[in-house]
Each structure stands twice: as structure tokens, then as C-alpha cells.
Amino acid sequence: MPKMKAAVFVKKNRIVLEDKPIPEVGPLDALVRITTTTICGTDVHILKGEYPVAKGLTVGHEPVGIIEKLGSSVVGFSEGQRVIAGAITPSGHSFACLCGCASQDGPGSKHGFTATGGWKFGNIIDGCQAEYVLVPDAMANLGAVPDALSDEQVLMCPDIMSTGFSGAESGKVQIGDTVVVFALGPIGLCAVAGAKLKGATTIIGVDTLPARQEVARQLGASHIVDFRQGDPVAQIMALTDGRGVDVAIEALGTQTTFEAALRVLRPGGTLSSLGVYSTDLRIPLDAFAAGLGDLKIVTTLCPGGKERMRRLMEVISSGRVDLTPLVTHRYKLDDIEKAYELFANQRDGVMKVAITP
Image (cartoon, rainbow, N blue to C red; front, side, top):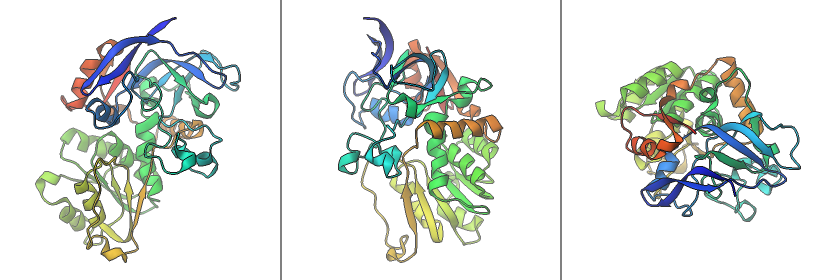
């Protein structure tokens, strides 16, 4: 059986490159030869044992590649075509999809809530930090990449861009809004870009790293709050003349940032949560106005599917957003363990790492 190289979860603090069989293609699948992928913060949670996956699983969920083989029932695509697929891979016909929440199309969706929703790559099926990845329900999930766009230009679309933009979309940012984004990692930076596209005219980014502050300004942030220079809540309220923000986007996943996001909302404002939380959250009585403040808390899982991918690539093609500055480091798949060591320890100003077989 033909083999491929793949980054495999072995045990806590150990992801290694191994040889695995190249997947067999079912009728609705597509086998994609990976040309570029990357490491996500969620992959680091897997590496550290903070998020459980099966031993032997290939990790990674941000694929750019070329169709190597199509399933017998797949139409509308051709072998040799350059494509991406979202980190979330809905079937298009599940209960979750048909009730308008395709991102939750996972194994438990027909029974009710499932914490991981439709996230399959590198979670419940083999992912894309490998030479090949098998894309399920290919007709619902493959997005054809325009010839004019490079791999790195579309590399953020499968997850980071889709997630960050969804923070602004779910928060229902409007023209003239004031928006704050807590934590300017890759998702937070994409949330800044999404808020600008949605019409926000004042965008406040909260972070302490100068390189991330600079990229945030490039993507549309009008103000930067450095939490090491004083209470960020007080700084944000001062910037808004005590009014508060229309939408607060929480992009880190901690009690501290969640609570701060709640405290800076104007009356009737919206907290749009993108963070992945590892412990129970507490909602302070005063910040929540004892439940009487007309406040809204919304959560979002990265939207996937081919139409989402098409729209994101249209944004890139239009030139309205350039996310290539987020790619700060590049490694070959053979050096994936070095890439993880760099990314997991956030050394050398790393934001995103491009991995190429």
C-alpha cells in the first residue's frame, strides 16, 4: 500500500512525523495532495494534552492543495485542480445543516449539542499536516482557488480568516460601530479585518506585542490598548468617553478577557466570543447588570463549506484584505517538530507558520 508522511499525535507533548497509508477514496470523497498548510493554536492544545484526540491521528485542519483523485460520485471538480477546504466540513444534508447551522454538523449533532461541532480534520478524522488529506463530502467542501492567488494568500481562509470574520458577523457589527478585539493573535487580527469590512469606524485592539499591534493597525485598528500599561477596561472606557463599545470580540478564551469584554459593553451591546475555554466561565453580577442590561453573548464556530470558502477568497481577490503578513515563518513538513517547538513556545515573533511538503 502506498505511504505518505504525516504529523501524528503520539502522546502528550509528542507529535512526530510518521509514514501512514495514503487514504482510499470513497464515492463522495476527494484525495487532496497538500501544497501548503499551517499549525493552529488548537493543534498546540492537542500537543499539550489539553484537548483529547486519538493516538495515531494525523493533526492539522488548514489545507491548501491539488486534487489527486476524485470519488466516483463527485461532480463539479477535476483532478489537478487547486483547492482549499474549510476546517469545518459539513455534509450539506444533516440535521444541523438543514436547520441553518452547518458548522455544527458533527457526529453528535443529530442528538443535540456537540462541543466540537463539525470540526473533523485533525480531530475525529486524519488531518492535513501530511502529504495528502482525504476531504469528506467533497462537493460541499472543496473551494476552487483562483489562479491569480498564491497558496499563502488563501492559507488563512480554511480556519483563521473564517473564524475571525465570524466574530464580527455574529456580533452584527454595523456601519459606524465601535468595536474592541481582545487579543491580537491570528484570529483576533482577522476579527479586526472583519470588523472593518462590516463597517466599524472605531476599532480598538488589545494586546502588548508590538508586532501584533502593527499588523492590527494595517488591518484597520484605529486604537491600540496595551494591557501592561494599565487596566484595559479603564483605557477602553476612556477612549469611548465612558459610553462603552457596541461589540466586544473575545479572541483568547480566558476568564480575564471574557470578563473585560463584558465590562466594556454599552447598554444593549454584544459580546461576540471566539475563544475556546478550558474551564467554566463566571459572569459577574455587576458586569451583567444582574441580567437586566439587554446585553447579548454570542458564540461562533468557524463556518466552513465551499460557499464560505468562495466568499473569503473573493475578499482576498478584491484586495480589500491582505493576510499574508500573518505568515511569519516557513518550514518543510520534514521539520514539523521544529515548527511545533517554535509555535508552541511563541518564539521569534511567530504568528503563523506555513508548512510545505
